[in-house]
Length: 312
Image 1 (cartoon, helix red, strand yellow):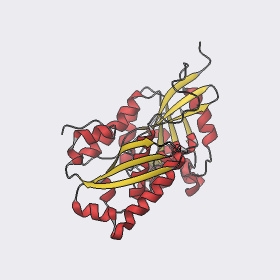
Image 2: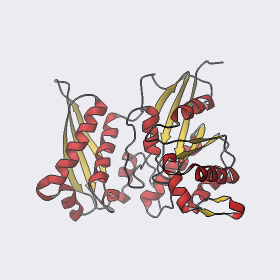
Image 3: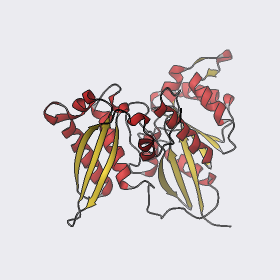
Image 4: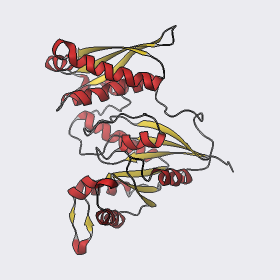
């Protein structure tokens, strides 16, 4: 029998549960973009952690929600597809939001929100080990947390329950150790020092898209996508990166650029710094904004994001 372990853990949950924050905290580096807006993650992102003799490949999935558009359906299908292939499932729950969304049940039991009940129903069909991770425990009183945990235990049998605060790191050590022990025996799939399996140009595009969410409001960021068109390593050790931000309307293009180009400059400056930090070299970032009205219905754009294109 091999002395090493290796497997995949799918992080699933509702939008804004904190999945991207958690995976970055577990890995100790940025491998997934983070935003206070819901449904930021579009495709599965993998972060790689070595814990003792185990290599854990965390899969950050799009938030599970009721899909309305084609892109929504692709995102939800991607999340459940990743869950179906995983060696273990970690359901991440925003404790504060879940407690507010649910209601008191019979005899003081905790009734879970309807979206959460729908997720649990699908999870119940999986034979993989299941772990409940209650996040943001610093924002909920302990008696309420215990009531919430009891509500989940009554709805579905979990192999273990964890109470964490992803932002502060509270509770993460125990979570790492338990997930490592749950991985199947076998050789590692990645080199010991590798923390992500996405190429840098893909992460760079995601970082710029994160800055769109930071700077822009309402529906506009959801109607935009970013692609790294070229990445050139220069003789002085720096990199020249050219990216295109695709939007669906001419009016959106004007908003992204901003008055006298101020908005696109701010997005570019913030993105350039993080891309340089991630790549550990200076980066010269050039952003272009183009209108592509039908990109939300273009199979090629979905493939670029790592998503299956829903036919209907």
